[in-house]
Image (cartoon, rainbow, N blue to C red; front, side):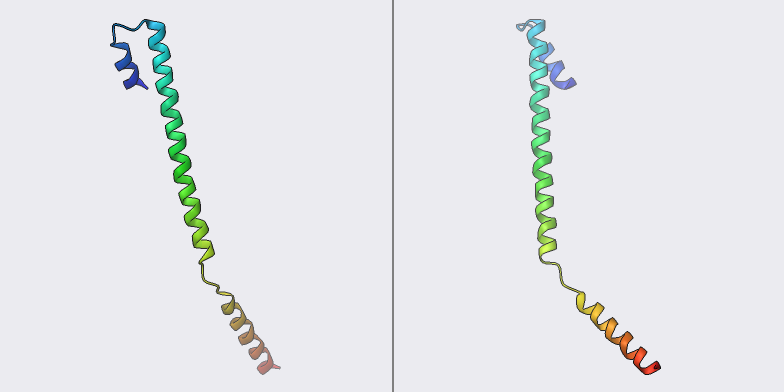
Length: 78
């Protein structure tokens, strides 16, 4: 905002109240731009995370093998 304020304040043809309004408008525009950019980045990250969750491998078979192994060990001990 300081850079924009410096640029606007140098213009001798604009009155001081108009300069203040001009700096405020620049600041609002930059803020909206940052918000839109942040939203776009967040959306892309969420899309990537959803894609990873959708295509993640299913490892429930590992737990079934462990349970079967434990049952066999219990049966051998009994």
